[in-house]
Length: 104
Image (tube, rainbow, N blue to C red; front, top):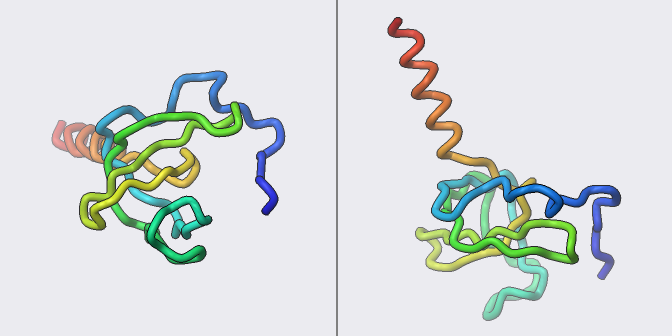
């Protein structure tokens, strides 16, 4: 299996995009690549739109942050790259600011 290194991208030169406990949403379906125990390779672990919380932050191939996302509804944690996630906390904060501005 070839590892896609996204040549030129070194995320770990800067701070992580997401913080511990942050509410996030999956931007894509995530399948088991063989590293998730008890499930077949190719099984969908996370569906686009699933909501989870950042439980851990690690690195992969000295290039990317890998976020351990706790998907409460599924009862398990899945490692995901930042580009596979979007912050629900940031989205909610933007919506709050927009509504506050509209009231002025």
